[in-house]
Image (tube, rainbow, N blue to C red; front, side):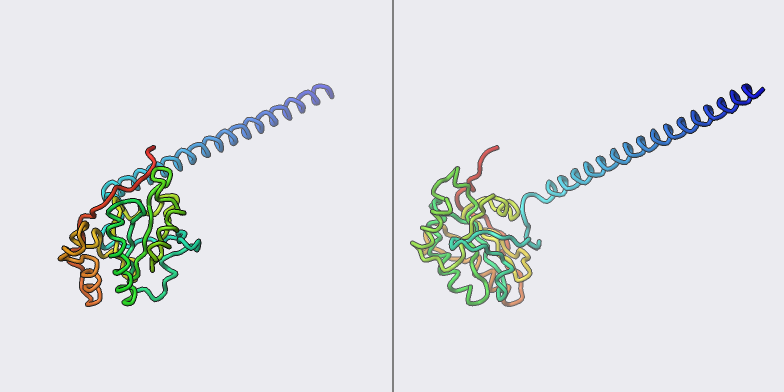
Length: 239
């Protein structure tokens, strides 16, 4: 009788242990399934967000448009110092100009850029020159070449190097030179050429950037606020 009772007790304990193990296994399986479902949902959300971002870029086109706020940036100047737009506390606007050393059009505009800066910086609108080219594609546009050119021409403005080519795509620059006039809030007010005659400064009849700044000074919107930039294509490595 005693042996029978022990057998029944052992059988009951074994049954309870088996049930407990089964329940624990089921809980673990349910938890794993739930975690997998959560992970799949997370991946889907990320994919959806990426697709939405791509759609936004595709619908807007490349780069900033007139009326959009530009993001600040930090780039190395020819003097070795890192410069950002936010550093220029007294600025009322910024003449962001993508240019370079080698392009004949950029060379043609060098003296005009110097004059533009000398005249407009006093009004609160400095020239911010940026070299967007990859020196591995165009060796003349190396940082050392920039330093030599800035010294030779005595540039009165900063001449920055878009070393990793991360800034010019944000603006949508495609040529050198290519101007983006920003107001004090870094909102793009004008995009395009400096004036209406790249080859002959004596034949210029419309100074687009100067006129745009004068409009801003009067509290008006530049007209035109967009012109076609004339110059060389930006040099970047083909992937």
